Length: 141
Image (cartoon, rainbow, N blue to C red; front, side):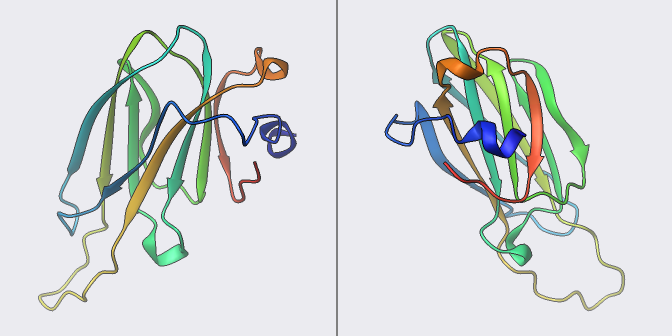
């Protein structure tokens, strides 16, 4: 139901923030913390968090906080996308925390680049009652 509902977001509507890419630079269980701000109208918006382009590019641990509310707790998520229906303020602050797994042994393998991409879209009027963050494997808008 959610995947079908997401198609109501007009592709012609411009994102109010992003897409912004956040890389896992510090590796092997070290914290990569990104804090940012953006402005919006006071309304419901669709927050899209894409976890890499391919499976090896996905961050292993993700935490997402928006305006002091934790939307994704620090954890391992198997989804490629997260769609969050959130009420925004005029000024919004977010925090993204990314980490890799810590491998055992002295000779650690080279890790592939990992990243997430954050975009915020206006929501179509049909979805004004949607709330929450949903994990998705595909995104069709």
